[in-house]
Length: 112
Length: 200
View 1 (tube, rainbow over the protein chains, first blue to last red):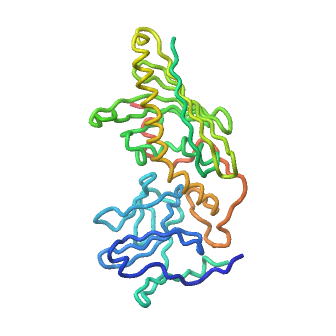
View 2: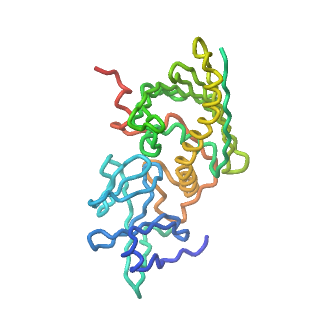
View 3: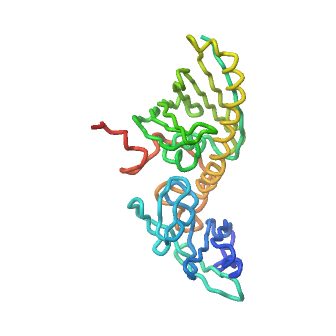
């Protein structure tokens, strides 16, 4: 299996401030990741809806995400589904701001 | 009875399973398709569903109409839909063929059965439907396209419905046969199930 980097540069902080959210497929981690800027706070999550795999939009003025396919809502802070009780939620990625970039760290539990 | 037949054809990078899933996923209709304002399941069993759909009139979006539609999965690759639109019986046949791995050809045939006094309007109806149906079909196709491609992508990453991607990255891979088992699972309280139980 190909080497899995434990850290990746996701985007420039300035880019996020100008055009949040930023959503990208990160092939190395086989996940779609979105960075949000909410009331000055950066939040980075996996953005694949656990229901059927849909994509999200942020509900304006809230700390919630809404799936564009079926309308399921999720809490941005906890990743928990607000529409139905399901076992999982959206995974957060830890990050650091390094040299003007948002650098993500792969949590240990994602690595075999 | 006179028949107006309109055929449409499209190709995209997804499996037959994803194509069938997209047609049978009733919960996405009002979220993804601009033309629909309500979509309710009246009855569903493993290969048959009866729905009540409410849609906007093209150009006059403030006016809506409702149609009862039945859809049947005839075989692994074929779906048939039946409804009556403004007194005209319609049969839609959708055949999805995987012409390469994870790449499918969609052949969609719409048959309009014009009978009785409506036959007087057959020439006008024929001109109208042969223009309108490809336009409508293309619009639905475009609205669903990214959904199908994304669904295909996540399934090939080992995505499980209601769970998401496997936790470990090394498990995010699946090259086996993709299947769509009907009916597609919904959780109790789904927005499309308001009419699926006895009413009143």
